[in-house]
Amino acid sequence: MGPGVAGELADTPRLAGLVISEAVRRARRRLAIGPLHRWRFSGGAPERLLVTPPDLRKGDPQVAADIYAGLFYLGGEMLETQGRSPFLLKAPSREWEAELHAFGWLRHLAEADDPLARSNARALVSDWIRCAGTQLGSRTHSVDITARRVIAWLSHAGTILGEADYPFYRRFMRSLAHQLRYLRSVAAEAPDGPPRLRARIALAFGSLCMPTPAKHMKNAARNLSDELDRQIFADGTITTRNPATILDLLADLLPLRQTFVEQSQPVPRGLFTAIDRMLPALRFFRHADGALALFNGAAVTETHLLAALLRHDETLGEPISQARQGGYQRLAAAGTVILADTGLPPPSALSGEAHAGTLSFELSSAAGRLVVNCGAPSRADREWRRLARTTAAHSTLTVADQSSSRFSRPGLAERFLGAALVAGPTRVALAREDEDEGQRFTAAHDGYLKRFGLVHERQLFLSRAGDLVDGTDRLTMPGLRGPLRHPEPAALRFHLHPAVVAQRTGWGVELQLRGQTWRFSADVEPTLEESVFFADNMGARRTLQIVVPFDPAARTEIAWRFERLR
Image (spheres, rainbow, N blue to C red):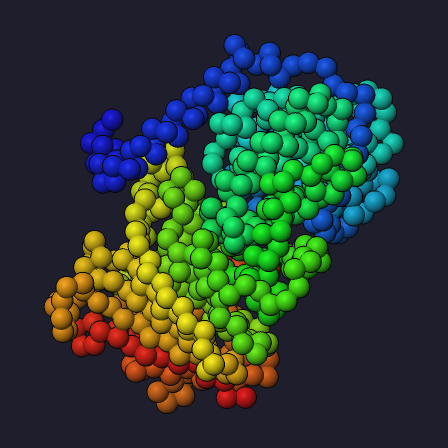
C-alpha cells in the first residue's frame, strides 16, 4: 500500500476493517463463481412456471413505444440503439447499465399488452440470454441486479412467453433456473443491506413460481424471514435509513405475500411482520402532496406506486409520531407536517447512499411542501450526487461550510465501499414533548465536536393549529461557559420547494404557495440565495434557500419562525 492509501485508512481505523471485510467478501464471491464452483449453477430446468406474481409498479405504453423505437431512457440517461442490441452497446453510465440489465422496464411493455410489445419483450430477453446470460463475473450479474432481473422476469413472464415458441420457452426457463441457482450460491455473500434482502426476495419468488424441492422452499422462506427481521426495525424503517427504500421493497414484498397465499403456502412470519411495520412507516414519511421526505438518498417519489401500496395498509388512523429506531421525528397538526432526521448516520457499510443531514427537517402544509432537503438526483452525475449528500444541501445548520459527516475520499476506501460515510455524529440526544399548545422536540448531535469543539442543538415546535413553527438552533462548546472563543462561522439553511414563491419583506421572507402565505423571520436578518432541487420528475430544478448567518462569537443561539398568515 502506498502512503496515500495507508494515510486514508489510518485516518479512521474502523475504515480499514471495513475495507478488509469487503475485500474478503469479494474474494469469496469470485471463488463462488469461479471455474471450480461454476458447475453448481448448471442443471436442468422445470417445464413450466406455476404462477406469475403481480407487479404493483405502473407501466407507461408510451415508454413501450420508445423502447420499440430503440430509445432507452434509464438512470437519467437516454441511449438510442439504432437497430442494435442494447446489451452490446457501451452504456452511458453504470446506472443506465444497471437499469437495463435489471429489466424493470418490462412493466411498460406489459402495460402496452399488444402483440408488438410481447414480441419486443421476447426479442430483448432472448438478446440478453445470448449476449450476457453467462457473464457471471460482470457488473450486470451483481447480486442486486440479478435479483431484480429474476423478479422482473417472473412478474412479466406472461408478456415474455405470450406466443413464444418452444425453443425460446426452454431457453428462458433454463436461464431463469441458472440465475436462481447462482443467487442461491452467492446470496449469503451479497453486500449487506437491500442487495442481500432483495436476493432473498428473489429466491422466495423463485421457490413459489417454479417447481422447487421442499428443502429449497423451506430454506428460502426461512432465510427471507431472518433477513427481514435483521434489516427492518420495529418502527418499520430500514437499516440504510432511506425512506424510499421502504417503498421499493414493499413493491416486491406485497406481491410476494400474495403469491405465498395463492400457492397455498404458509406466509413466513418475518414477511407478515415486516409488511405490517413498513406500511405505517410509509405514511409516517409521507407529505401532504403525496411525496416522501427527502432523507438519506430518497429521490423522486413514485406517487402512483405509493398510493397503490398504501391501499394495503389496514392500520387506520394517524401516522405514528416518531420512529425512534430509524432516527426520525414527525410533528403534525391541522394539515401541517414537520419531518426531521434525529438519528445517527447508518453504519459505514450501509451508507453508500446516506446523506450528511443530521437534524435537517422538511415542512409541508395542505398546500404542499415549503421547506425541503435537496434530495438525491436521478441523473448519474457524480458531482451532483456528491453535492446532494453534503450538509449544505439540507435544511439544517452548517459550520465553516463543512458537513457534519465525512465521506470516504477517492482511493482504496471508495473503490471498496463506494462513497461511504466514514465519520460523523456518534451521539444524538433527543427529547420530545406533546403538549396542549402543540408538539416539540429538542435534539443535539456531536458531528462538529471533534473538528470544531461544537455541539449543534435544534428545537422545533409546531402549534396545535398548525399555523406556527418555532425553531431554535444553538451551538455550544461542552464545558465552556459564556461566549465561544474564536469559533468558525456557521449558517442556517432552509431550502425551499420550487413551487414556493419567495421574496424579502423587511426583516423577513414572505412565502407564497398555492393560495397560502407564510412568513419567515429570525433573530438575524436572513438572505435569499440560489439553491437546486434534485428530486423532481423533470430533473434538477432551480429554487431558492433562506440563509441565516450565525456568528457563534456574537451569540450562541438563533431563534426563527415560520408563521402562516393566510
